[in-house]
Length: 135
Image (tube, rainbow, N blue to C red):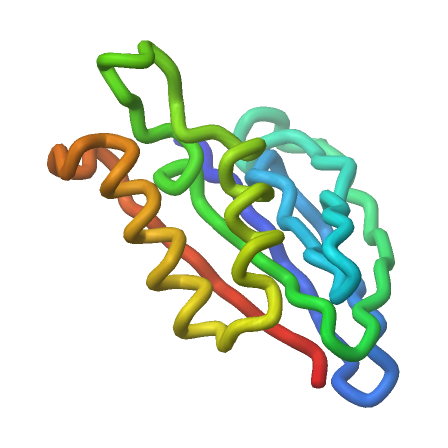
């Protein structure tokens, strides 16, 4: 039995993020200027090695930056005509377009793009998104 896991504490006043990642998709910080950064590295998936060590890392959110946490249900939906997955590259490209919109708009845009990419096929996995923006 195993699970991926990402945990973070965000200091709203300073924008500092303290985080640890156990094999989960690397969250993305979309900078207000349009640059994308992935929060890495990741540790082992929980449950694989009982004595695994996990590092605490830090990052920083500046005013206007957006943090996106997502499950593989966002990046792994498949388009049979293209024979490829939606992927992180498409996700980052979309985030660049909608980075200045509300969190609700970002989530709706991602859901809409993934559904369009798969031709509206039923999802085979959960699609989890968490969007946080520093104001």
